[in-house]
Image: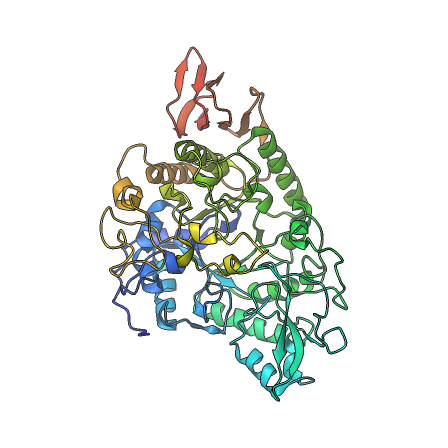
Length: 564
């Protein structure tokens, strides 16, 4: 595949003063709004149907104008793409489908010129089975030093025909695969907590730690502003790799500390990494993808000498319900306050059903749903949930396309699916493709402006009416709601960073809190409610009627007021 790409348009000029102001802002990450780009589905510059770095670079002014502070890029490293790039063959190279290292360098430079920061994914729990280390381990056979960099073990049973332990893959099936040795005989087994093409590193081996410290410096020297750490709760396994003794292990994930997840030894690794990061100027940051049983255990990852942020999966999984939301908000703020870390809030990402579709369905269906539900209800709740999220103290994450109100594409034909979990029996539901369909930029075109050559996953009819072109400048559109909300958030001194809210009396099913002169009210019920008019309305996702000092807040609506 050619690595040549058409030149991206020059970014819209910004004043030196504006860029300098962004660069000087201390603790920027405590209240940052960070936009996740899934590179293969964002913008295609060369018409091959796959998004790429030059496509992202060309769209950076859109992200600047949206009002976000930083852009997190999902993996674009050299990879066989067995798991959409989370199987990395070379951590210092760009996969040709996405471009070249020169493209990455140009993207980082242009982003900085627009006042945007760039966060890249780091995948330290496992590599690709096409990584040079793993290929060498297979070729050298049992007992070789190369095999010690992964978890190779002899099997159980009379002839080693059984896996070394009872661990199950997150994608379904056993977490072990048996190899054929160089002499052609059945041999050892290797551990892969995800797909067989993703063998787990052995972080007890010093070479693994040395390699990743070098990888960090490579990208820091190129100018990236931080790293999102994939499976940050992984890496370290319990000594002896003990059996779990439960054959419904996937149901335990997120509820118990597992022998392969959330082991205390991961924190030693992050303390070493933090020392490296702190050598660099510009307040670079680490963000943990850490699935833990409780938000209190998540807080362990963001102690002052470890990582800066950790995704709040407890919040992402919360239903559109005032009581549930308040409980998670309080627990999150209470857990983060003692370690001095900001809370983070997220509603969607590349692994879960978009929240416009989750909220369109009854609660209890999980985070991977194949039902369209009530589209109008889902969008209304999604818009209200976004305003609530952006009003909370701390940092917020926006997944590409949610600012367009995109639903999940729930009716993809089975033959076009590419999620590896879909093909592996009893693992994850395997419906992540629905949130990964390339986003629409224009009303018309072969892929609604995504590129000139179609798209790697089919886009549904009517996608153009949700496009950036269709929504730009349209009063009441979801895109303009996001743009306005992010602008208000920047302008209001009481929004952004902080560690507490003052809860106000409110009707059942309604959340109301104060932050200085700012007040947020979220009506999670299906009926209008009457509350005090707290001042001047800054923004709302539906029309609010005020009379006699009272405000009539419609169903599934969030309102921002200021007394100032």
